[in-house]
Image (cartoon, rainbow, N blue to C red):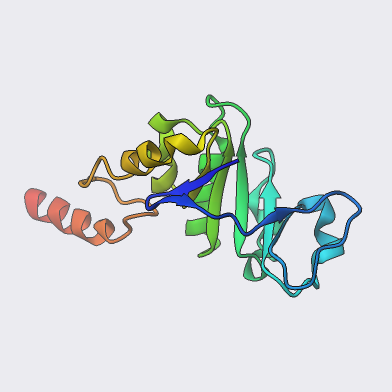
Length: 164
């Protein structure tokens, strides 16, 4: 599947590791939680697929070793991966790539990015420019979030000034 972020179409260096196979040395691999024990000592970049049914606390000890966490959106009405992204960034301090996979819709991209998702698997490569543009449609936000934590102190000061 094509991969895109706010800059446009990306090359995906990660290869999905098939069950029972070993990763090539120094290669970037994407694995499931069940495969973790087989690749924990791998020397290349590691990515982990996290189903939206699992609590990110289960992988918090693995985060320092991970360069990528791929969150699954099995259908557009299931928003549990939004919470996972927010927890990974806010509570666990994960600074690597968080990728949205599955039912990734253009109308939800801005909300996904506000929660900390940095890249998106999409269905069609010819939509990459429209996807990148959608991530830049709104330049002003009012709420602090993972993508704009700098707003928190400003909002607090404004609140105090207006009601003091």
